[in-house]
Length: 360
Ligand SMILES: NC(=O)c1ccc[n+]([C@@H]2O[C@H](COP(=O)([O-])OP(=O)(O)OC[C@H]3O[C@@H](n4cnc5c(N)ncnc54)[C@H](O)[C@@H]3O)[C@@H](O)[C@H]2O)c1
Image 1 (cartoon, protein in one colour):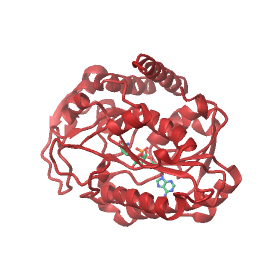
Image 2 (cartoon, helix red, strand yellow):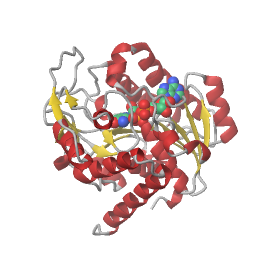
Image 3 (cartoon, protein in one colour):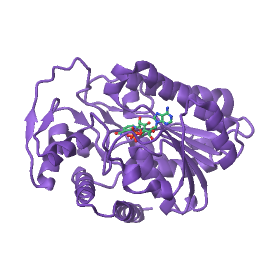
Image 4 (cartoon, rainbow, N blue to C red):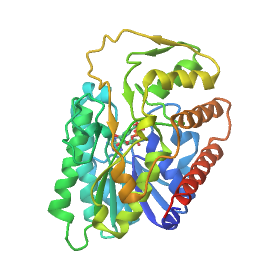
């Protein structure tokens, strides 16, 4: 599986972030020639440094709003496939910095699409958006790709704009045009896994509290999210990138989420983290925040199943186990490059087993 990527030239934007670092590492292990373009890491600790990614791939620090530098990287590297993950991905920050959020997620995305269009080597482009791009009706309905886009907060709506931008860009410049690339969007839910230290995310908040021996404070313990291990949507992005490389049939928006039975409350995930960590306690705190947070959000993943043959392989408990294993090892000063590779290999074995056992 994924042997297609051996020696392929891959450009990842956002390779210093949580998902981008895992994706770059995975592609590196598959033998791909990887270049990353992103801002320098902005958390301490961070996954990019913890696994020493800068010595494994060609890493360029730059802003996607800097067209000149961005286009130079495309020209110099001549990528065949682009995974665009660079973004301002935090809902809370989008309240504080709406302009930066829109500049990065909409104008920045347009810059990357344009740089790719000027570079003839690019054959496929996966634009990573989010499950939050749908107009949320706050019901247990699972959103399909054909549902109305929306977004209550500036982050969510900027990603809905990125979806609209991608569809419009495809219509205007790519579909049926000679030399254009195949462009798809990937809509995934909340991911968990080792190495995330971003502010205002459940797992990093839990780990930071546990390390400091403090109670884990939950503002919205009963909120329901489509949690999945970070390698799950990344395996979907890899499948999508491969298919897109060969056919425009896959140039569309696709959801990547857990099976419906794996959609759990915030409090379940936090308590499981405590159990596996071996200490800690939950404390529900009053939410004095005026920031809107969706109570429930679930995705329909039938399109990914039927079009790509993709489906998640970890249960929620396995996803949390892998996550806590990673952080425990980090704080015990283990070799995190080796551990992260081992987690990727373990995931691949499970994915191969699942694919192999499927009836024809
Ligand atoms: N983490 C999640 O649960 C989740 C869920 C759904 C969708 N997503 C999407 O996945 C993608 C990656 O998310 P993440 O969790 O890894 O975020 P992250 O914050 O860990 O990483 C973001 C990356 O984008 C880069 N970046 C930000 N602004 C930039 C700019 N102006 N120029 C160049 N690079 C810039 C950062 O340097 C970093 O490498 C984002 O598009 C996000 O919206 C994430």
